Image (tube, rainbow, N blue to C red; front, side, top):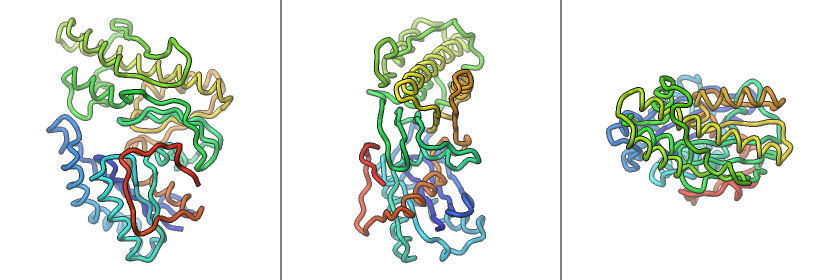
Length: 336
């Protein structure tokens, strides 16, 4: 089966074509970073309008890249949630109409399921079962993945997600949007130990996260510090170390609790080099296999949607003509 994947949950328009026999044939991503950078964050209405402008030209470009006629598409998958409602409606409406015109099946995909399966696109994919740490701007979750469609949520953020905390802290330090990568870059200029912040919710049992208090601690410290590049870099590094340590502690607990020996790191924050390095070192010392998607598949993309959609379509899933999008959608509700 050849499946077109469409991702429009937030500020990236992503399209990809996946073949169940040959793998990923091609993918394209249009980022709206420059548009939203003017406002310091995503403006939902602008995101929706940009998806409308870009989605059809991107599909034409993708078909040319793959040297494939439109008629070769055998199924369509689109992100149905969670995400920005207006943005989701663009992708779902376009995908469902295209599938109807081609007389092929269509299926809506859970955004976080697609993220946790993104490493399946790599040459050395993880084997079921495994533990997944999903870290992005909207979610921080630990999920036990028993098999495709069988997911057990072990812990999640009770307030700000890790990526959201990165962006808000970056804004506090006067950095641009998106803040996560810019804060990580500034942190490379800091000195470890100069600014030490708490590792939230690690002094108690459980696998849930909370990053709002850490953000407040940074605000308090920054108000007392001199506003020069050295102080800001030390604060950025202290914040990044606190987030990475917290994620590592929780991953270790989850692996010990479940007895799993394989860890998947996915989502936008999975591109953070410090997090990758710390997890890799610890995993190597403890004989844990760790898997990451390539950097371009950490952020939102159509390839992960096309892969996940292909698996669901092959399993017999199909959406009716009357569709809906879901701004919130618990991963636990998914079934094969």
